[in-house]
Image 1: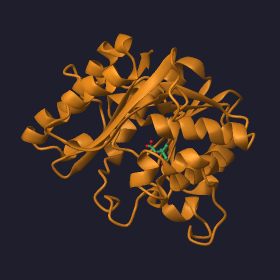
Image 2: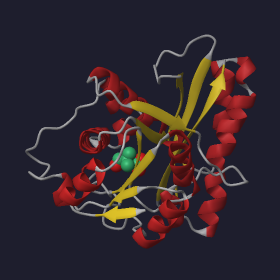
Image 3: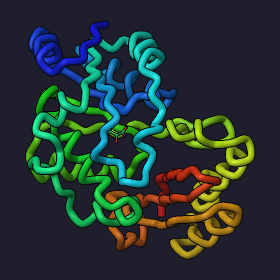
Length: 273
Ligand code: PAF
């Protein structure tokens, strides 16, 4: 496995790669959810590139950019074990050569201002801009993203179609702890008590799925009943592409965001109506 930091060094290493390149963009602090992405890329692609970059433009002014967990040495070991060929760990200046404030960027469509976007204004603007940049620099055939960030995955799919970026986007199912908690780099912020409270999110989603035969109202009522101990930002049932008009039948998505102690968690689950 080759590890590079500078942009030129990366481009040189990338130029030596034969075709069918899979990309796994990450912000580091890798856990089993990321390893599932790396494994999926390894299984499908002749060459696997991972990036480790904590992208400042997707953090709001009061968010956790400064303290976001940074564990590069351990991350590289996980990449190596997963059979990654090339890891790029760029600096902010490598990625945003003209700075970010004045530079050209990618504006999501209306979905970017809903759900997470309503609570974290500008978040998806930062995500789509950096993902578009990585697509253009790395030039992958396929890119892998977790379903855990389902709105991000949906918006990246929209961006690829709307801007004809020509990259196949693959969603990889969420990895959960045995008790249901979805893996997240932010789980390290949870105290023991928070950790117990956090289970309300996955319990709500599973309760909603179990009530699916009763329709949208029954799903939301069952899910709400599990969320009494946490501070809910939203609980929403949407179409599979996150359309706000939920279809009467077929695939749908139940999404939840809540604050547990000082930590904000999100989770979601696919269900059939
Ligand atoms: O999901 C993430 O870790 C980030 O949002 C991504 C896609 C790597 C962009 O910074």
